[in-house]
Length: 476
Image 1 (cartoon, one colour):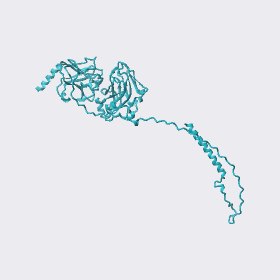
Image 2: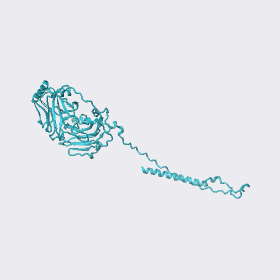
Image 3: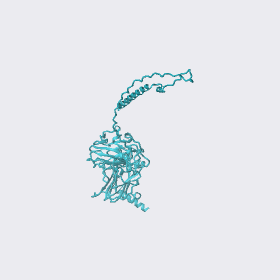
Image 4: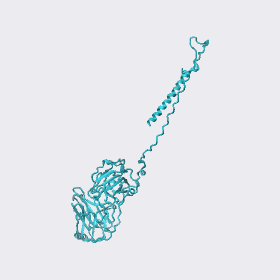
């Protein structure tokens, strides 16, 4: 009992030294303890996880630690924030008394910095700041701004599980700004077992070439414009000052999709593109996944698309939805790809932004996507049919010459009939018992008549051959 009372007194003393920051820095939403671009709003309402937070190490005394949290523009909803000193692992850490909190922020202003300020500075060390208990009766949501990439100053835990390619928009304010890195060394973390993806070095056999893209179904407005280049690539223009520059790419509306694409086996989406104005870094894009479980743009169901603004040549950008908890759960439940909404930019560009897109394909790993050379004909030769080679028609031969009909000679003069001899004595005197002569044949036609018929047939056959050949020549 004495020990419990002592712990409670210690917590009360710490709480007395803490004030809560609440929407003080609306003009600065960047944060100072995260990557430069934390432009993805990570939804926490009604998700498959209940807590998310960052393990971080400070290198001096601090006066504030806080996350930057959206409430989807309506300033409604609540989140609870708690700060612990890190100890060995997640379970050991949260079993101890917190340094600050748990404190619930109700109906906080959109994009507020919610966390803790310290009248007595917090000593340097390794801590864990966590968000939990998302509530929003209106249902629009609450969450935290994030980036789907690793950051050396944070280790993000989702329900206590380390998510390597994720960081949160966060503030850490020092009493004295450090000269070097603002963060110290993190404890070693073990990531979750990779349950998505496959070992296939090639993309899935269903892929999308922009040369086959049906522009007639694209409902582009004033924010994004599309046109087909002469080489078949798709030209995309995001106009200066555009807001929420996006378009829906539901595959079945634009392409022939014969096979189901497994989210579990092929979760990575690769886009081959070329940026036109690399001198202006316009930030990243975002992809909302459309699958058999989630067929429309849904908060918390998106992933970042990161461009290399220093690359003037063709580049392959890879969207990695495996860091999205709900996508992973649905993929393990036999989800299949239906399409996605491609938000070309998350930011409002200060100048026009242009890019050309060649193809979109699905891969079993990020490494395979980056290594693919784009030669689909070599990868899937059976699916690429070559146009048949047109051979030259054979030269038509002249019709055979028609020979003159054979000259018909005069019919031989008939010889006088032989003198009939007396019939044999044994013959019947009432019958004609004479036999036909050999030169009359069994046809009953004389030899000269047969000669005329055969000669005429030769003439007719030659004429027919001439007609057929002429007919063939005419058709050609």
